[in-house]
Length: 502
Image (tube, rainbow, N blue to C red; front, side, top):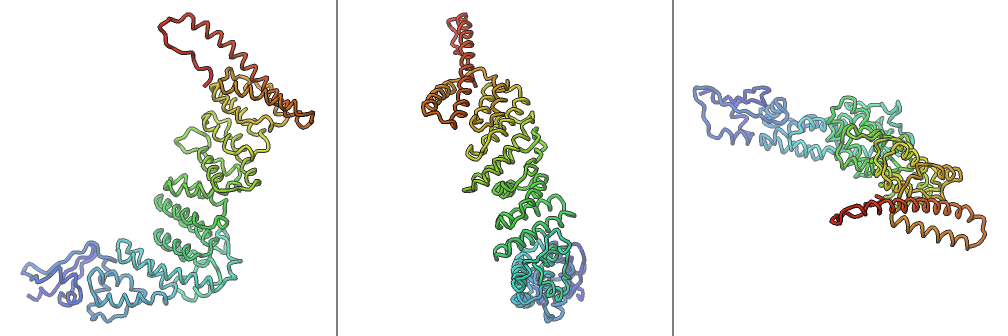
């Protein structure tokens, strides 16, 4: 019966370990429950199989040594994580008491020791104990980082850019002296933190934001983190990294985030199809500072499934974020108006751009923000040239967005003989009413005096009245034709006159 004292333990299929049953069961509550009062027979040793042991065979052997040594070995930062998770799994209370006592002193550990323990936690990502331990370790890491930065406030003014050569500096995680010497830099920790998994980096970022860490430095780290990690990451990992980057940038002070860099993130986000809510945050960040954008920034190619040349819906969302973002100064409004007008002129020749989308672009900017309508007149002219099959109603909706008073003399002259603007064949009741109002306005202006400043205004109104009268004449002619046709229809027909204008 001597073989009964031998316990065979299979650890995750990695390795089989033979132990003295009496020694290991003396300390492990888990094995006591599993084995109970079991006895062995001539068939061989007792065998236990663990399929999800935290840390695998290495962790189990470490715990076994503690048990064989009467649990009197020293718990250190280098073995705390594996030992604590294994002891929790095996219910070795004596070892747990030591690991928990050691955890109370985490805040006194050196930076490299905390970082090493965090790396061990990510190796045990399936263990709930490792997850809770990682939270404590991360809190200690961030506290140490904040203390180091606060100890060298003057370094903030000379911290290197993520694109600079100085930024490639990397501390030796095994050297405490390296930690002390590099604390004069605000970015010395960038490469150190990069060794952590995306999940731990996300936790780290939440903590530094919560502690009101310098937003400029956080933004620099995010772009550096994304740049370095993308080199070897899979598509899913890239998506996770990018979503973490956008989520964190969104809560930072907008003035601390380089605007140009956001368009770089946008290009990556469109290719990776990140979460819609995260994409919305990125669009809001870009849109709220739209006055800083250039035309090239907005000329984003349309998604592969779309027939449009450019991603018009994206620009519409940018503009909405800008105008919904609160009160804007006149200079900001004018910059955005000019930018949108340039964009409208760029996309106008696209034969696949629907009239409704083009109209949405034309009406994006409040009329008060536009000093001149010359650009949108040219854009409408190009659009009508590329879309000869528009209905009268669609043409009229586009032309209505123009203000004759805001067109320069040269554009007015061009418009008066532009056949694309003269082909509206009919007017509905609303346009007829507009004609009457224009006539009244002409009379009112003419009777207000002989001011030279009103001359140009009157000239424009008279031009519009002439155009309306011409359209009315065409409408009357067509009405006579329609009436003649309807006389020949049967009395039982209930069809009404066709609508003249859409």
